[in-house]
Amino acid sequence: MSTEEKVLFNIWDDYWDDNTGEDQETYGYCESDQTELEQEEMCVLISDWINENIKLPEGLLVYSEEDSVQFENMTHEFLENTLLPLLKQSQLKFQGTLIDFYSES
Image (cartoon, rainbow, N blue to C red; front, side, top):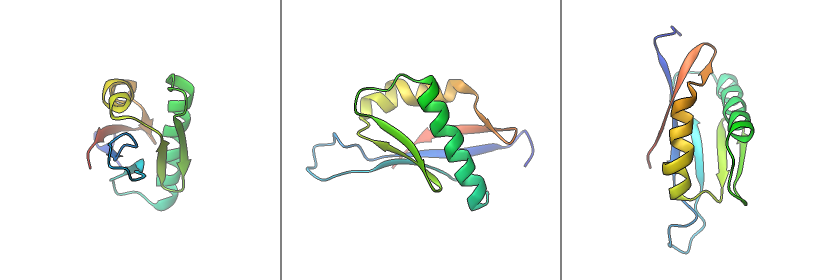
């Protein structure tokens, strides 16, 4: 992978506060050409970075689980106003390649 490429990382935005009355999952995953092991390593890197560098609201849990990052109890407001902007500003890289964070469902 060249340093000019980006690793795409999507945070799938189904929020627990969406008033559907159903449990919703919010998780992030890699949308680039990587092995399963590389995806797992990247998810550990991202979840560790979040937990070490961002003040999380009480009750929000962020952890890696196989080839995804799980976000338990994340609100839409926190993702859009805090988490996503800070991840984009982080210039976080995996194996020398910039991670491009975005969110869509």
